[in-house]
Length: 163
Ligand code: ADP
Image (cartoon, rainbow, N blue to C red; front, side, top):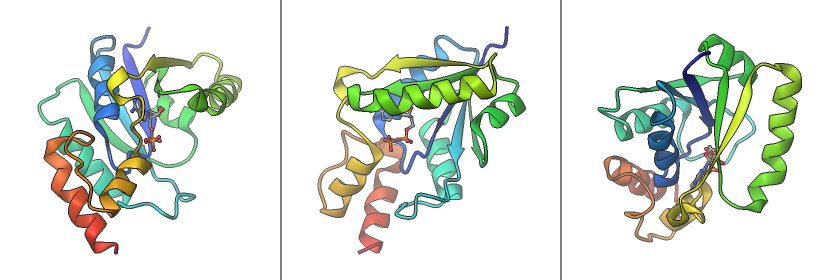
């Protein structure tokens, strides 16, 4: 049994909700590989793939079980490349559920021995998403409760530049 989990997402930018899943993932798995998707569909992205990887690296500094890796293409192929057998996902509300179950079932069809594991969001972060962070940032709101301190100013600066 592999003790490696892949936690995939866009992380544009990483939030405290993402970080919570990474930290809790580390208490279950020996290693958590955060897979940062180079998503060509997301045209309204704030940060480039290189920037998103860098922000995640900074936010998880000192966490020895965590590795941050960018990827493109099929998630199941990336999971195999990483010698992992588990896809770790965070679930916020029922609105996440329908889409996530479809993806989990599709991935199961593509690769039957890769399991998708869902972790419930902490109450504190159930409302939090990267798009919400981007909206608050755009209008100059206080982000300190929503994103890791190590990247706060990058998000503020980038949102100002985009105006
Ligand atoms: P978002 O949905 O915020 O734009 P991503 O697409 O990068 O973020 O999400 C990556 C993973 O993190 C997904 O499994 C998503 O369900 C999960 N996730 C996102 N925000 C939270 C949160 N606040 N709490 C728990 N899991 C979350």
